[in-house]
Amino acid sequence: MAGNPFVKALIISCVQLHIMLTGDLRAQVRDTAGHETLTEVACLDVPPGERRPEFGCFNIGLATGLHFRQTSVYWYLRAFPDRKAADAARSAAGIVVEEAGRIWLSVVGSRGTETQGGDAIAVAGPLQLPAAASYTAVLSYAVMRPGDNSRVHTHPGPEAWYVLAGEQCLETLSGAHRARAGGTTAVRANIPMELHVTGTALRRAFALVIHDSTQQRGNPSEWKPSGACQR
Image (cartoon, rainbow, N blue to C red; front, side):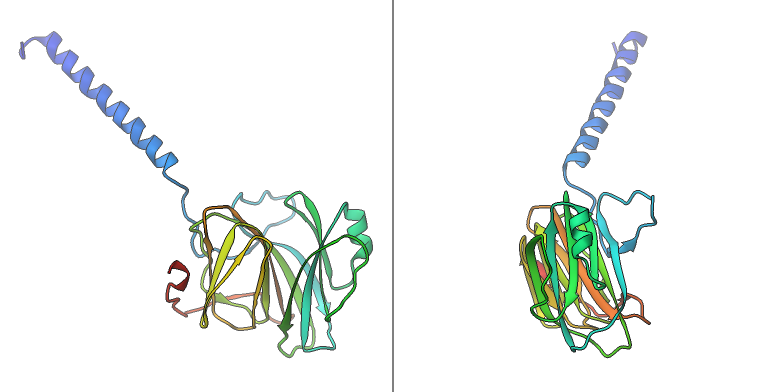
């Protein structure tokens, strides 16, 4: 039978079908096994009118030429029903953005700074400021998945986070610092760090960096994390 051309053709067809089915099955397994992990993420500027990626970290607001009488400040985050109300409450140190289906007002000021209107969401601080003639505040928004992580980096000013959803772990020289939805955390200027998305849920978070206006927001670091967030 092996010499029968019909049998040979049938055998070849069966083998080809098996290969096709196996390939399709493997593709389905790859598609459903999990996402492609984002590593060494840095917050990016997205040009106006350009669609930003679904996942990553993005600089969404800026306040420049800031001056403070105190050597430490606080970050206040409030939510408003509409942009008109948020704009009316915004000061020179304020940033208004729309994210996660809400209108947000980010304000930097002294302890007890009052803002009219909206709902108080979070306060982070005190944030120790390095000496500078003027400061720039950069507000970022991140959407990252479990297993994603940032690049190892530093900022020439303090950084603070407010986690809207999910969990994060920040490793610094002093160890692991964890925050969940509704929580805040902060680090001083020039501290090497690496951020990891932990848990099982999508992480959404705001981050604010306040730095000397003559310097850039962040820089890569040669520091080697110990893996504290994985333990």
